Image: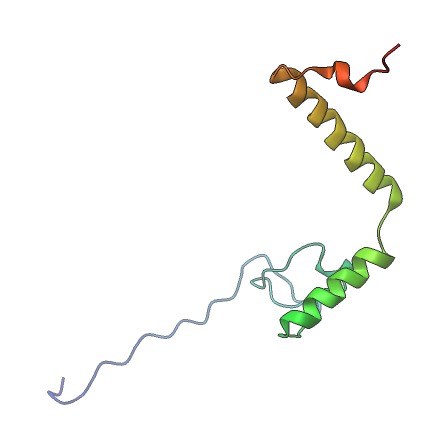
Length: 96
């Protein structure tokens, strides 16, 4: 116990109890489950490059069925909204 000696911090060697390293990496690394399927996730820090990669992925890897389904859902929700606000829907019918 010297006056000029500072205390050393305690060091612990923690190893997880139920983790077996089979080359899968660290169990503490937080990773999105879809990162391995996306081309926009990378090491590039350039914002313009990220946007251009995202645009290319949208143009080339888009699913047409998903886009149609989203369009139908949006149209149905829009119709429900117009009914709720009591919009005059007779303008969409043909006049005879």
